[in-house]
Length: 308
Image 1 (cartoon, rainbow, N blue to C red):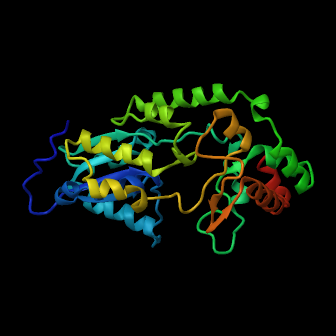
Image 2: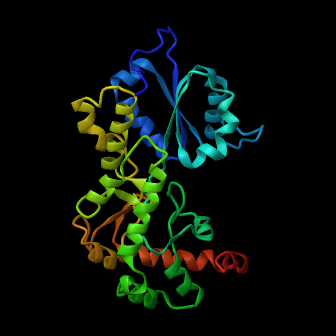
């Protein structure tokens, strides 16, 4: 599509920059496994949350500054469509005229987690030894019960027996989620929604609503390479992709047994274990810990008001 395999004939390898959220880091790792990519480009990522203070000495700030310093040597600029309109204008003048701009999209699916919300108060509670937030993914049902003062064991018992499909139409919500992804896909060179739909029941496609498994990222990397007219990953790299790149070893978002049953998921059961900050815990244990942590997070009136 872009005729990139011929390169530029320059002694200094041009840059391939990936601009977007943490998913772009996974794609960067995958692209670096392709020998032809390594031969032709310096592959780097710049985070899309790019506001940096003058005295910021973080790794994030260094990545943003590196992009600004090296943008003129950029041959390929891969950007998530969601941030393209919002942030691309500030970088457009930095890129050379012949830079190839490739839009993709952030792949996320909330179908397995119908009560998800971004629980900011509970994110502030630190778990000893944990990387990142203690509970990055919130649950509106559980928070409502916590705020109502229901005892923890009663919340756990109620939630474990809840018929979620009676509360909300899970299949209709899933179709709506796929339709939304297809709308985002219209602006992208990658096409993965059909893959998600075809594999949703039989194979694990997402660890969390916004962290896909290596199987899905493998498809994305393959399509990006094809769009750039570069060879696919060689057999050794393709075979080790799953073990070499991964968010799955860090944390999973457990799936409610009623959701597992409704969608007939073949890769999960009510007793499945999930990674949680170095431990393997069941869904029930996750609910218990989340509720207990929520009692701390929402004890202060100001924090409780954030959910009201």
